[in-house]
Image (cartoon, rainbow, N blue to C red; front, side, top):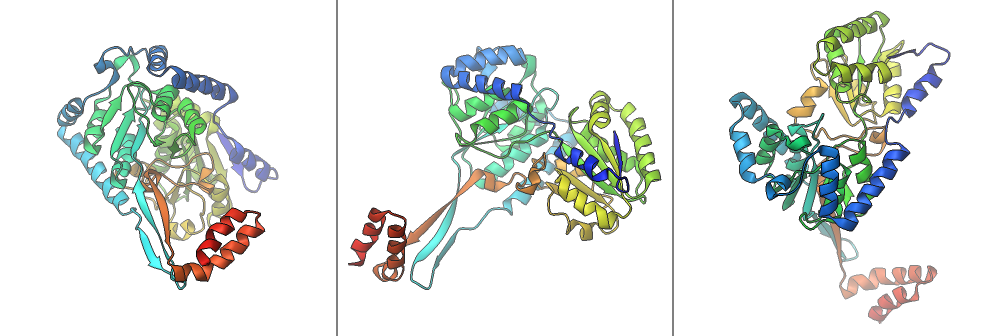
Length: 430
């Protein structure tokens, strides 16, 4: 864990190192992913059989080895403990309600020149949703990806999820039932992303691929952008907690560990104006971490990438530092959280006040938990219905309208050296 003080002479240099620390894909992963994708494109199902056996120790032979049925998903949902089933349903309902409010409206109007202008929004035909398996097998991720797609109007929802040694997470199946997924394929990794993008003998291609995954999945999405649309290139999880000494140190320690337990290269950062409080939080991290089932991962993340930053004045200094970090999650555990939030321009999602832990956003709050990482919050947003939609503009001119605006268009076309453009307008003006 790194300790920085804003009063130190080398603070700006040391803080810049934290800001620029990418913790993401290296060149070897990029080359390996390119090889995998090329093989999927060239040999289709045969490549999926090979890579599933190699990486997941799962044989793809019978239809049941390839796909999970809707009936199996329904049975998984009905077989859940009643309280867990209710919790999953509550999460789905709240996610659905929040994203329904995001739906954009079509536009259609006539301007002063008499031209009818506008735009219509339409969903993509098919979306592919990556759901992690292994260490990160999360039903919440399936809900956060599938529900916005369905709300947007996507007709075909396809899930790919690895099943290491054939193991299936029943919670993921239950979430698929709630979200109304059409197909679930038992494949994961970069080869699954390639199958969604290119299509194979069994799997039809999709238009958009979303969902979190490991470095190979993220790199596959990056390389395939343009073949398909993607939500974002996601890196390791991260959280920034801005907290004063009026907080319970146990609460703040738990918040920092909530991201550290995701991945050994996740990053948790605390900014506070009280060194004694920071020490209390560190002590509680040690205690709590020792009791976590995920302690090995959380400990490695905190020791290698965690940071505590001591500032003199939270209100004056923290917003600038937060904007430089542009973190995935930003918790404001202070009295005037709404005031500080107005100064934070770059964040995936902001959690306001002492009683709003980041974890509530992961499950039941409603906003999407698929968020930009690695400082991409400077230019990107969290997943929304818009990631599954596209806008088509339209124009209608009558003769009178074309007479008003056509001459200017023809002049511009000639100025650009495109006489056929100009001719197509001028002939109508005559």
